[in-house]
Length: 397
Image (tube, rainbow, N blue to C red; front, side):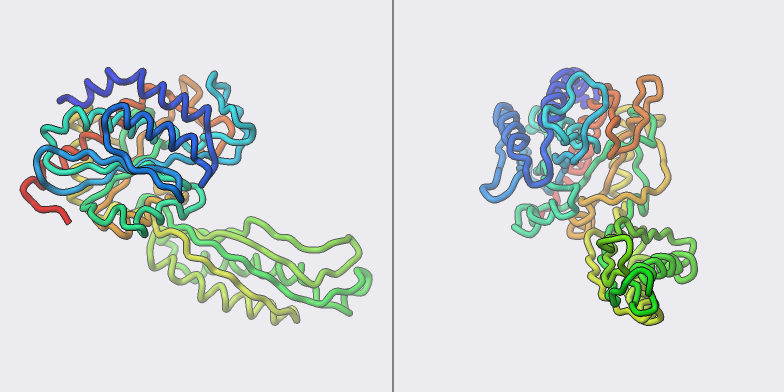
């Protein structure tokens, strides 16, 4: 089968899937209607699909007629708490909830790939699992499927994301780091309250917190190797109850992003040292909660990356391939990549200035040119088929 040609024939069906999912956007862990729709569409095709009583999302399995390895294709399905202002005719019917990160696109493309691979199952030399994953936006959605053992037989995996810095319809398959890790922290500063006119009688938690925020940036500028990208950002600070009171408590929360294990691993120890010393210098104390969430997205299996690139060229020629700058955003698929080392991640470009598709993800005006959707479905399918062909004759896990 020519997957590019067949995907083009399925274009209207793939777009229809996307419109339904976009209109019925649901937040993380609440994707019940989305899951029901996915199960219904997969069942109509005749594809076996597993859903869960205690969790959203589903896993479809296409068993090839010949034995071999098992490859996983993954799409996320949750939306964001954003009031949509994209101007499309099929805007979300749920106030304050929008598919502003393209997960509706990923799910509809994977539904298209499911049909392509199901029609090709007689020629498949192994098994394809299709994971429609819940709760990517809260960084822990992928854990359930691995931790419960549903992916324990997978030999290789691929994820994909529409990406607004890459030209519409182009595919980005890069070696090495692609997206950053994501960790978060909460710092609570304890001082002594006093009247605002008599600060000397207290220990100002706000002043201490301000100094801590500034000093934390030395982790990036003076401790980290400048050749290793690192972000330490404080996103919230909550303190005080009234204008004339020296407050005794300030609470800050923030995020840490890194592309390398080296940069990621140096932050917590140095943060604790800086926070404790700065608070002490101000006559205060402080405590830190530090949470490791997701590792970086890294395409380190060069042989697998080559399969994905060759699949793209088979479909659309050499010119379809592009590169892009590293992203400091994070991606929950990295947890699966950590568990399944033979994994990789692809960007599908969605930037199209002629049609106004220029807004970043997580923006109320984010939209795509839907002509790209068949390309995503075809890349999913071609990659899976090519991986199984290349490893034909080898037993799976």
